[in-house]
Length: 377
Image (cartoon, rainbow, N blue to C red; front, side):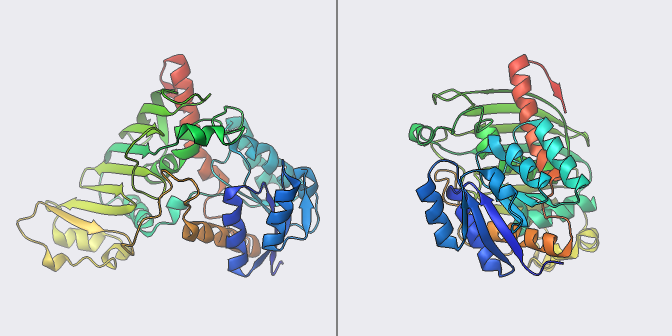
């Protein structure tokens, strides 16, 4: 049994700093090795900043290092699969940045290797840590709201032309895998899949309308869910008024007896008064009652009960216009959970099997856009 997890990090770009800070703040982990891919000086500087003694410029050497127990994959999306598979093959647990990968067959291989070797494979989707969305998940799973009918999911952000010319991989099919859906909007799509369930089919279109890039800056799709609900998905990195939410997303799920809305980083439950107060109080998960809503103060003339599901109503950390404006608290939660998973042999907070669902939806939208046909997932 380990008493401390020895980490390596592959790729030392912007997001890697959040992984390094999170693991060191936890106290049950240390960073022992880092691997860069372009600048040795920058890789050395990163290692020195976070106390790593070993510096590699070949990820395979880090994967073979016997003093590394787990690896954070912080490389461009199109390299997640090859980096993860190499680490898993060498007996390393892996926490991978979003998306899990950009190709379906590689995600399957990653998941199968982790299962066969009994290693942990986790992914990073900060929305799943948010208190309001976690309460919404419990409410939906309880079944109190009845049949799900309509799902609306959107990502609305802004990326300038300079954003895409600032590196040789942004906006490319090979390394980014996609644009406003696969890269930025994947957070919204993961949240949708997590709350609303599996998507059965999609009919969509994705294209670059204003940016000179290989991938889409605009996308739309009609969705059918396995539970019978219908949905609409929209994504763009061209919005002049980006969504004021941590990941630039907005989600609305309609049910037979209520509605859940995630907007501006906050989650709200709406229930019609036709569902009697006694019924609501007895069936809603206890965690919702503890959110501070007092049913006794409800105006009897109101048609809808409104319940705020979040723990706090503080300022929103949003990355819709600035990709470096990352929610540190959520990253720390996921990294600490992964450390626990390794030390105590538990399932990661977001396992590979769950993390792949959003990517499968995006891949289906791209295929539908190319063929002009509805695509089954």
